[in-house]
Image (tube, rainbow, N blue to C red):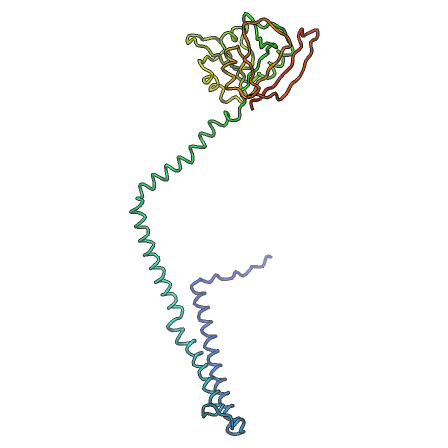
Length: 315
């Protein structure tokens, strides 16, 4: 069998305070009574020492016997004790303290009310509500802007091209070399991304390249090719690709010239040779661009020309 635990009764805080007050008063009165008894006994004892036994009969102060002075001082202390227990407690006790606190609180409330009145006059409630709503909107607005531009801040706009030593890109809308490894690298880098190009470059493809979003820049407003998004400026092309962390600009020559201003990176395959061409890659300003990586590939049975992969980063 489980024994029942006795629960301690909960005492009301007010009752507890009254009990504590009564206990302290009882202790005070008891100590005062003890002091009074000790004073009487002590006084009688001092009188006996002086009058009956004759202790210190020759000692006087201001014409009074020493024991009279002692009794008077002791009586003064007893009066102070009495005043502390009865008079001071009655006039400056718990009730007096409570009244003082209530008066102080009432005074503070009145001062707060006056201050609030002044605030209401200076800043009407309706205006404060409007300012609060405006502040909340301002706090929320940067978050919206941040969410909008964050992908754009983190993305890397890259131009990718293969050009000869004389910056030749191609002739008659075709390349003047065949580099299988470079085609493979182009596919690896651009797959899954937006590829931005001019109309002529897009039309060199037998069909749209798989797993890439084709964005074609053209002045022809009636141009509507299948498998591509058509825009009329580089800004519009990059806006379409705003969620792509690395859109690629793939040509041709005029698009590369425009893209030079926008690009953060250039992946250039420098084909080692001088070629006759009608389309050229723009000169790279070495004051604005720095080579971050280079990788040399010599000519072999599959590649008639040697070439070097160069990665440029804008300073």
